[in-house]
Image 1 (cartoon, rainbow, N blue to C red):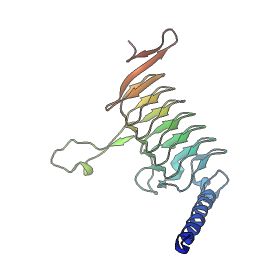
Image 2 (cartoon, one colour):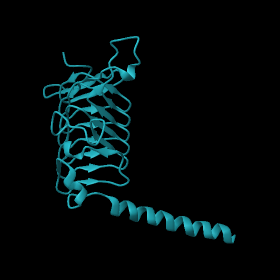
Image 3 (cartoon, helix red, strand yellow):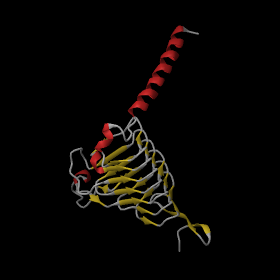
Image 4 (cartoon, rainbow, N blue to C red):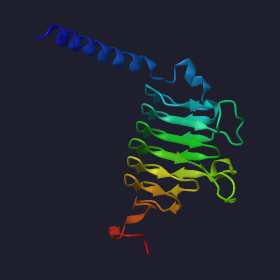
Length: 213
Protein backbone atom coordinates (compact mmCIF):
# COMPACT_ATOMS: atom_id res chain seq x y z
CA UNK A 1 0.00 0.00 0.00
CA UNK A 2 1.14 3.51 -0.80
CA UNK A 3 2.76 4.98 2.37
CA UNK A 4 0.86 8.23 2.01
CA UNK A 5 -2.46 6.38 1.74
CA UNK A 6 -1.58 4.20 4.73
CA UNK A 7 -0.74 7.28 6.80
CA UNK A 8 -3.94 9.01 5.70
CA UNK A 9 -6.04 6.05 6.81
CA UNK A 10 -4.18 5.83 10.11
CA UNK A 11 -4.59 9.55 10.79
CA UNK A 12 -8.26 9.51 9.74
CA UNK A 13 -9.02 6.67 12.14
CA UNK A 14 -7.34 8.53 15.00
CA UNK A 15 -9.24 11.75 14.23
CA UNK A 16 -12.56 9.90 14.15
CA UNK A 17 -11.77 8.23 17.46
CA UNK A 18 -10.88 11.58 19.01
CA UNK A 19 -14.10 13.12 17.71
CA UNK A 20 -16.14 10.36 19.35
CA UNK A 21 -14.21 10.81 22.59
CA UNK A 22 -14.57 14.61 22.64
CA UNK A 23 -18.30 14.42 21.87
CA UNK A 24 -18.76 11.92 24.67
CA UNK A 25 -17.03 14.02 27.30
CA UNK A 26 -18.70 17.23 26.04
CA UNK A 27 -22.19 15.78 26.49
CA UNK A 28 -23.96 17.63 29.31
CA UNK A 29 -25.70 15.66 32.05
CA UNK A 30 -27.54 16.73 35.21
CA UNK A 31 -24.39 16.45 37.34
CA UNK A 32 -22.37 18.86 35.20
CA UNK A 33 -21.98 22.40 36.56
CA UNK A 34 -23.40 23.85 33.34
CA UNK A 35 -26.72 22.05 33.97
CA UNK A 36 -27.27 24.23 37.03
CA UNK A 37 -27.85 27.21 34.74
CA UNK A 38 -31.15 25.74 33.54
CA UNK A 39 -34.57 26.34 35.09
CA UNK A 40 -34.68 22.54 35.39
CA UNK A 41 -32.35 19.84 34.10
CA UNK A 42 -33.83 16.42 34.77
CA UNK A 43 -32.34 13.22 36.08
CA UNK A 44 -30.69 11.14 33.34
CA UNK A 45 -31.31 13.93 30.80
CA UNK A 46 -28.57 14.87 28.35
CA UNK A 47 -27.52 17.54 25.89
CA UNK A 48 -25.57 15.57 23.30
CA UNK A 49 -22.46 17.06 21.74
CA UNK A 50 -21.80 19.10 19.71
CA UNK A 51 -24.47 21.39 21.09
CA UNK A 52 -26.14 24.08 19.02
CA UNK A 53 -26.77 27.64 20.17
CA UNK A 54 -28.18 27.64 23.71
CA UNK A 55 -28.79 30.77 25.76
CA UNK A 56 -30.96 32.15 28.55
CA UNK A 57 -30.75 28.73 30.12
CA UNK A 58 -32.54 29.89 33.26
CA UNK A 59 -35.74 29.99 31.20
CA UNK A 60 -35.29 26.50 29.72
CA UNK A 61 -36.63 23.33 31.36
CA UNK A 62 -35.52 19.84 30.28
CA UNK A 63 -37.44 16.90 31.72
CA UNK A 64 -36.12 13.69 33.25
CA UNK A 65 -34.59 11.19 30.79
CA UNK A 66 -34.94 13.61 27.87
CA UNK A 67 -32.25 13.55 25.18
CA UNK A 68 -31.45 16.68 23.19
CA UNK A 69 -29.66 15.68 20.01
CA UNK A 70 -26.48 17.15 18.53
CA UNK A 71 -26.56 20.69 17.11
CA UNK A 72 -29.98 21.43 18.60
CA UNK A 73 -30.64 25.12 19.29
CA UNK A 74 -32.58 26.00 22.46
CA UNK A 75 -33.15 29.67 23.17
CA UNK A 76 -35.37 32.02 25.15
CA UNK A 77 -35.56 35.57 23.82
CA UNK A 78 -32.97 37.15 21.57
CA UNK A 79 -29.99 37.35 23.90
CA UNK A 80 -28.52 35.60 26.89
CA UNK A 81 -29.18 38.50 29.27
CA UNK A 82 -32.76 39.27 28.25
CA UNK A 83 -35.33 39.28 31.06
CA UNK A 84 -38.36 37.22 30.04
CA UNK A 85 -41.96 37.64 31.18
CA UNK A 86 -42.61 33.92 31.72
CA UNK A 87 -40.54 31.19 33.30
CA UNK A 88 -39.88 28.69 31.95
CA UNK A 89 -40.24 29.97 28.42
CA UNK A 90 -39.41 26.57 26.91
CA UNK A 91 -40.51 23.45 28.79
CA UNK A 92 -39.69 19.98 27.44
CA UNK A 93 -41.26 17.04 29.27
CA UNK A 94 -40.01 13.63 30.35
CA UNK A 95 -38.49 10.99 28.06
CA UNK A 96 -38.46 13.21 24.98
CA UNK A 97 -35.99 12.89 22.09
CA UNK A 98 -35.24 16.04 20.10
CA UNK A 99 -33.64 15.25 16.76
CA UNK A 100 -30.34 16.52 15.41
CA UNK A 101 -30.24 20.10 14.19
CA UNK A 102 -33.68 21.04 15.51
CA UNK A 103 -34.49 24.56 16.74
CA UNK A 104 -36.81 25.38 19.63
CA UNK A 105 -36.95 29.17 19.78
CA UNK A 106 -39.12 30.55 22.58
CA UNK A 107 -40.19 34.07 23.50
CA UNK A 108 -43.40 33.53 25.46
CA UNK A 109 -44.36 29.88 26.02
CA UNK A 110 -43.47 26.62 24.30
CA UNK A 111 -44.56 23.47 26.14
CA UNK A 112 -43.72 19.98 24.93
CA UNK A 113 -45.41 17.16 26.83
CA UNK A 114 -43.86 13.83 27.80
CA UNK A 115 -42.48 11.14 25.48
CA UNK A 116 -42.39 13.35 22.40
CA UNK A 117 -39.94 12.50 19.65
CA UNK A 118 -38.85 14.58 16.68
CA UNK A 119 -36.93 13.83 13.53
CA UNK A 120 -33.98 16.02 12.54
CA UNK A 121 -34.23 19.73 11.71
CA UNK A 122 -37.61 20.41 13.29
CA UNK A 123 -38.34 24.10 13.93
CA UNK A 124 -40.67 25.20 16.74
CA UNK A 125 -41.30 28.85 17.58
CA UNK A 126 -43.89 30.97 19.40
CA UNK A 127 -42.97 34.23 17.64
CA UNK A 128 -43.35 35.41 14.08
CA UNK A 129 -42.76 38.60 12.11
CA UNK A 130 -45.74 40.87 11.55
CA UNK A 131 -46.53 42.70 8.32
CA UNK A 132 -48.73 45.62 9.34
CA UNK A 133 -46.86 48.36 7.50
CA UNK A 134 -45.97 47.63 3.86
CA UNK A 135 -43.48 50.51 3.83
CA UNK A 136 -41.28 49.11 6.63
CA UNK A 137 -38.87 46.22 6.24
CA UNK A 138 -40.59 43.13 7.67
CA UNK A 139 -37.64 42.29 9.87
CA UNK A 140 -38.01 45.62 11.71
CA UNK A 141 -41.74 45.34 12.42
CA UNK A 142 -42.98 44.36 15.87
CA UNK A 143 -43.26 40.55 16.07
CA UNK A 144 -46.32 38.72 17.34
CA UNK A 145 -46.30 35.93 19.89
CA UNK A 146 -48.67 33.05 20.64
CA UNK A 147 -48.08 30.09 22.94
CA UNK A 148 -47.29 26.65 21.50
CA UNK A 149 -48.26 23.35 23.08
CA UNK A 150 -47.40 19.85 21.80
CA UNK A 151 -49.33 16.98 23.38
CA UNK A 152 -47.59 14.04 25.03
CA UNK A 153 -46.72 11.00 22.96
CA UNK A 154 -46.50 12.92 19.67
CA UNK A 155 -44.08 12.43 16.79
CA UNK A 156 -42.85 15.26 14.57
CA UNK A 157 -41.18 14.14 11.35
CA UNK A 158 -38.05 15.61 9.79
CA UNK A 159 -38.15 19.30 8.81
CA UNK A 160 -41.54 19.96 10.41
CA UNK A 161 -42.25 23.64 11.20
CA UNK A 162 -44.49 24.47 14.17
CA UNK A 163 -45.72 28.07 14.04
CA UNK A 164 -46.96 30.35 16.85
CA UNK A 165 -50.36 29.52 18.31
CA UNK A 166 -50.21 25.83 17.45
CA UNK A 167 -51.75 23.34 19.86
CA UNK A 168 -51.44 19.64 19.11
CA UNK A 169 -53.37 17.03 21.05
CA UNK A 170 -51.79 13.91 22.48
CA UNK A 171 -50.37 11.14 20.28
CA UNK A 172 -50.29 13.27 17.15
CA UNK A 173 -48.12 12.38 14.16
CA UNK A 174 -46.91 15.21 11.92
CA UNK A 175 -45.58 14.11 8.54
CA UNK A 176 -42.14 15.23 7.40
CA UNK A 177 -41.98 18.71 5.93
CA UNK A 178 -45.37 19.85 7.22
CA UNK A 179 -45.93 23.46 8.27
CA UNK A 180 -48.36 23.50 11.18
CA UNK A 181 -50.47 26.30 12.57
CA UNK A 182 -53.74 25.96 14.46
CA UNK A 183 -55.44 23.79 17.08
CA UNK A 184 -55.76 20.06 16.45
CA UNK A 185 -57.30 17.22 18.50
CA UNK A 186 -55.54 14.14 19.82
CA UNK A 187 -54.93 10.95 17.81
CA UNK A 188 -54.60 12.47 14.36
CA UNK A 189 -52.08 12.41 11.51
CA UNK A 190 -51.21 15.80 10.05
CA UNK A 191 -49.43 16.58 6.80
CA UNK A 192 -49.01 19.21 4.13
CA UNK A 193 -48.39 22.93 3.76
CA UNK A 194 -50.39 24.23 5.49
CA UNK A 195 -50.91 21.10 7.54
CA UNK A 196 -54.34 19.48 7.70
CA UNK A 197 -55.72 16.31 9.25
CA UNK A 198 -55.07 13.33 6.97
CA UNK A 199 -56.33 10.61 9.32
CA UNK A 200 -58.02 10.42 12.71
CA UNK A 201 -58.72 7.67 15.21
CA UNK A 202 -61.83 6.87 17.21
CA UNK A 203 -62.47 4.01 19.62
CA UNK A 204 -65.59 3.07 17.65
CA UNK A 205 -64.28 3.05 14.08
CA UNK A 206 -60.49 2.93 14.44
CA UNK A 207 -58.50 4.86 11.85
CA UNK A 208 -60.50 6.92 9.37
CA UNK A 209 -59.42 9.17 6.50
CA UNK A 210 -59.69 12.91 6.87
CA UNK A 211 -60.75 15.04 9.80
CA UNK A 212 -63.36 14.07 12.40
CA UNK A 213 -66.92 15.04 11.47
